[in-house]
Length: 336
Image (cartoon, rainbow, N blue to C red):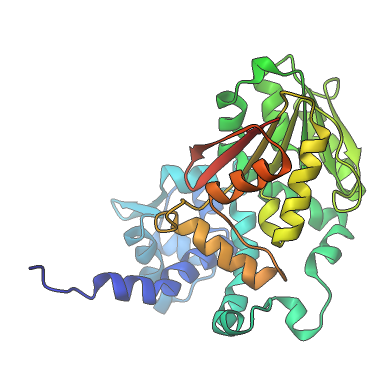
């Protein structure tokens, strides 16, 4: 019989120590600094403005957490932090972590309250407006946010662009397209596809700039609209990435029905996000993301592949399947 050990309890229960260490490193742009060249303790301490009491422990903690490497007294990024946390690279996903640091970290301190009340614990808790309404009113902040969403979704977008059977279809629309990386990657990998990005009008200039930068302005267009109160654009394939989990069950079912109505016979509906495994015991990220929806939204929640398949079949889809993409992300595909 194995002797009980406290390691996992302490590691998870005090996990906020590690999280805040990494988030502070992102906030101070440590990984962007080290992407220029490795540095020793003293030079890095000076450039980062670290106090002599904190510098060594902070940097060595990041080494122990495998976010930095230390060789011959100099600190280096790891391949992952160099790729994903250098602000100058298009693969940067630190924008999401910046938002987590400034917004989500303190809100998660109210998780117990959310668990007992079922109410969001973000800015709206104190009567402030929904922060995303203000975000969409400021083009510069909106662009930064949408770029961060591109970074965190890129790997799944690339996988969908290559894994799905695109040869059977000619047109595709991405609902809630944001900067447009999903439809862009689909169009890049499949030159026969004509694509549309559907989102609020404020997103249009940011989407069109990104499409133009990828040389796709002749095949990928923007369609302004609100999926809550308008029909979806018609296409052979309708895609929704990180959309359904924002909403309650009735809205989820409504959006699935709208996707069905936008498709021709034989058309495909692709839903992707951190789909929870059907046993609800393996995809930790998906389950914690659902708790994040509790913190951030009035009714949103994440769901299993079986849940989504049931909504699709209820709407009329003939067949459905669940396919893993990358990391915690999977897609559910429904065929009309």
